[in-house]
Image 1 (tube, one colour):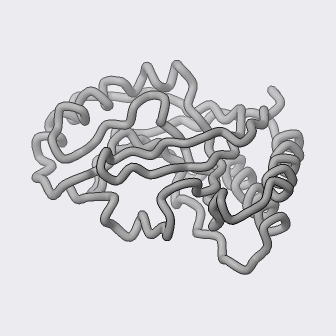
Image 2 (cartoon, rainbow, N blue to C red):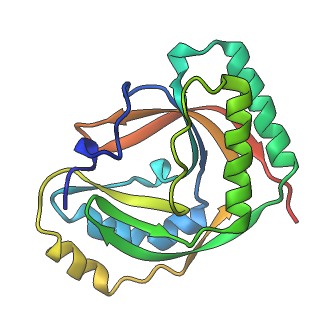
Length: 203
């Protein structure tokens, strides 16, 4: 296990107010992955993600809340409402738990609907915030992190603890959340304030 918060995955110039679009898991999802969270919590060197902070990143926007005005935030919220209205809710079956160098997650192969969703949110971000800063690449797979590495540790005990855990779970994609995300490096967690939320119509 290695420290996620000292890795190239976290190269933000500021640790407070990073603009993101997330999907937040349902209560059913959270209950299904709790055995994974418990196993991570018992392992020194990886911080378990509390249920209220579990998320799937759709898009990270390379701007921070303190850099943009309220008008831009409102216009992006309006754009997300349009994206949501043009979509419909869906679910992505997740595989895992998957242990990697920097933590533990559940993930799925890229889904066509998921790709359409992040493409639309990225296009809207460029229209509202401009292209002066390039958008970061989208996450390679839809995933929900359940633990972030915080120290150099032998992962074998955690691997053994996770070996018997199964997570037959699907991520319900039914609401987009526009957020200002904070990082607490010392605690090894991401937290956020909700700017707006946008429901996707049911099929």
